[in-house]
Image 1 (cartoon, rainbow, N blue to C red):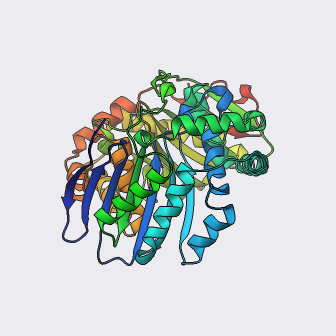
Image 2: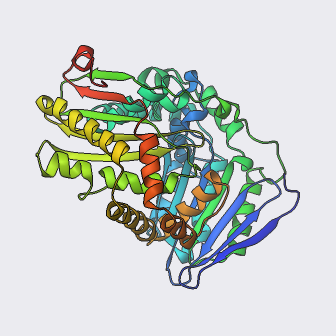
Length: 439
């Protein structure tokens, strides 16, 4: 662990901003992108702890904690946290993922010191009272119920469970009704104290800012909470759990729905796989937009579904590829037949050079157009530092996309789409309805 403060300039873009990185003696990493043309700043604290770091008993604790940290600190009530940011026209929020949690605020540039103080305060010094635990328990149970009322979202959880089983990656981020109902204040507080350490955190900010001032303000906030001295790495033992590679699973969740919701897919590539950019182009060709093969085949030509798309998800040591469709129950078999046939055709015959160029163009557009505000630039810094071994500039990413060749995409298609598939279904069906669905 670093014993002194280290600062370096990672990149300078005359049309964008200057990215700098500082590592404090306690292991906290601080990254900023200075963009003088902006009048706002987005500030976030990224914690490298998510739902995959939970034991079965603690399932949902990361998301529960995300809610609780906004309920009050030693210096601020829940109302203080929200009203102080809203009083200057800003916004603050948070979200939990499988491998990280983010707490952020977006404010006018002049109000950045306030945003730093508020967000760092709630992340490092929450009180987690018993009363607040009980209040938020009810809120989260309602959130789970609301999610269960959205089968188009729920089917993705069913698919993830089909692939990963009871591995932490296979569980819902929010936990279950039983796990949330059983969590105690002591368990949540213990998870918070063990896992939320500077060594697991990245602070990221983008907009009209001064890097040195951000570092001083963040350092003061962490010192105030007792995080100033070097500390042992936070407990992340569960992250080493081997990820299963299940396939050929069919999971049917019988539910009274107007539409049937299906996801067909397989184990994909981890986050830093060499073929991730080629996979991105292939995903766009298959189901990434209105010109994609699956959209044209299923919706435009046959009118079998309103929503159909393919997707990828990447984790540190695994990934997913899948195709989603929502259709009338009586059309499920036809939709699955078309999907399987198209995937098999692409695996065997590949895709055209023209399709690859279109897929690459969509990738590049998503990268550039997704960085038109300070929030997305802040997220790029936080994720880049927390999840990757390198901080790629926008130009670096575009060059890597440009380097993807049609042959690379065809090789990915032949390898990935030939993998055994799994299927998740939500609707008024029984298991035997899909006994031969995977061939």
